View 1 (cartoon, one colour):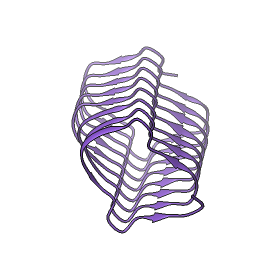
View 2 (cartoon, one colour):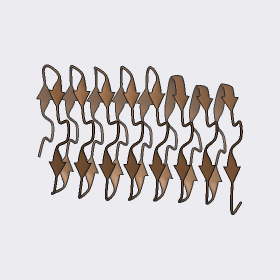
View 3 (cartoon, rainbow, N blue to C red):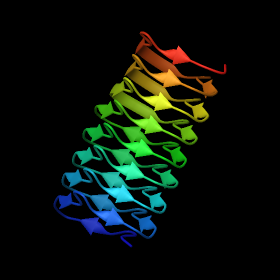
Amino acid sequence: NFVETNFEKGANFWEANFNEIAYFWKTIFKGDIIFIETNFEEEADFEKTEFKGEADFTESTFERTARFNNATFEEKATFKNAKFNGDISFINATFNTDATFNDTEFNGIAYFKDSIFYSLATFERAKFKGETNFNGTKFKQMKFNLSIFKYLVYFEDIYFNLVSFVDCTFENM
């Protein structure tokens, strides 16, 4: 339980296994945070968390619901090859620099509603297997090249400067 914890420097959770609910609600990470190959067996709650350094969740697995609602990513956010087996929500999240979700699997509902991506957001080769919602999201530049959407996807009231959907697959639309 790291609710409202203030990490003054970076933190390393590489290959950590959280077998209970991981509470990082309103936590502040002032340095780089590493969650590479981390396994979250229960819920992961990062609501209102501030990531002031780079946040790296490469190849992490979220077995249940993961919440990043109202989270702020000041530096690069990487979720490359991550697996979200439960629902994921980034509602009202802010990404101030690049956000990478390449090769990521979204096996439940994926909410990015009303989020802001101030730089490049890449979802290349991502697989969205549940309902996906980007309504109200603002993108400076987004790439969904080679991504697969297996269920309903919503892009209502979104704003973007540059978008790319090269060789995407949309099923059950």
